[in-house]
Length: 527
Image 1 (cartoon, helix red, strand yellow):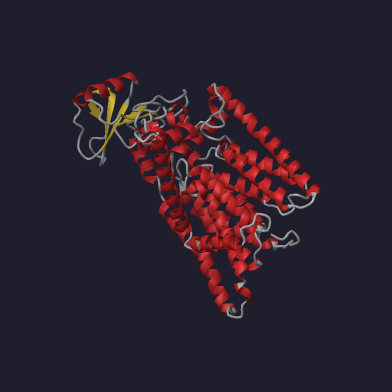
Image 2: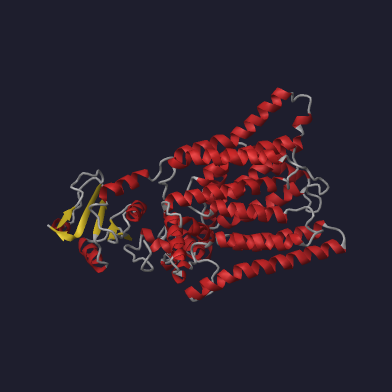
């Protein structure tokens, strides 16, 4: 990363790319407007709490506040919340493309390759924006800006880089709590590298100043939110999801979060749809007594499985990920020296190892590592630049064009396939709710035998409270007692055959058997 290079990229390309992105996104929006997921329901509910001034219940240790803060003012326009959340993701995508373009200038590559990467971000970011309602695209955007600051070749020359790094790291934490441990580890390691890669005392002093300034700004931003949630839960915490999620994965007995095995659960507050609005109240699964070496072996098995899963995710994102990985391994083998290693090799490798390393301890989903997918695109551009293929006589104009098309398609085709698979997700449950809305009273209490997520979605559309799915292997007597304990109004039975539960024969099955695979019993309506 040559600090003397100040490549100026024509601004009209960025404008054109953003225009293509917004037009394509607007045209595609109708195919994703009913997409629904449990996390999205919680972010919408929390945003509505901020609008209603219910700040005590809006403050939440599981879900970062930033996405709900951005969503809240958009809900004032009265558009359907699911659609509004998709519009917000689409707008965040604009910032994401700008951030990726800025980060690309921390990687030395020919201008033509940088332009191809910029156009490649359109289908990639669209696939991110239309996948789920989550803050992961927002996190990717904010951390891209953070990396743009901390990757700066002039980091030891200007004191502003530390301050800006701390600011964007702090804001990223407000989007998702995982940014908290990532920033602490990554920012410290990056400053160590900057310190030893610079020669003069003056530069080393500025690196120390940048580290202290960045750490202070990050502490002030994150500390404010940490103080709020720690006060709410009565213990110090930067996020409640890690402890419960880690316990769910490493229990070596009960697998999964409590919503799948605890049985019926009351929503945490009067305006919450379900316990998923604040899963902090879920139990941590009991651990089997494996002993020290047993726990080590269990963690090793989990981490190994997650690493293989991540590798598969990279390959699905782009087949060129294998080529890029091999090229970077060769770069490291050729010059294994922290002081002389090109920044384009050292810095992204460190970021990937730290970011992926944290998730390898617990669990991973493709959306968790979108930032790493973006890094892969930029690293691929750097590899093409280092190979100097475009300077070779072998690469005629035609061959160069073919190579760039392959590079573009390696990212665009998987993104298109993702968009295709997401299309019309959630429409079925929306249409089902329209059929049931005249039969199910609003604000009722709903419980189910299974299909926890589908029942939650149906409860959302019917404007009812959801008490979850029953415990596995529960007896008929205990099920009846639990339904009465929580005063459940409607019991959803998913499955082909009619339930063998004698007490239900006393109640009306309100669907009349007309909905395949679903029977709904009105427990307040005796025959």
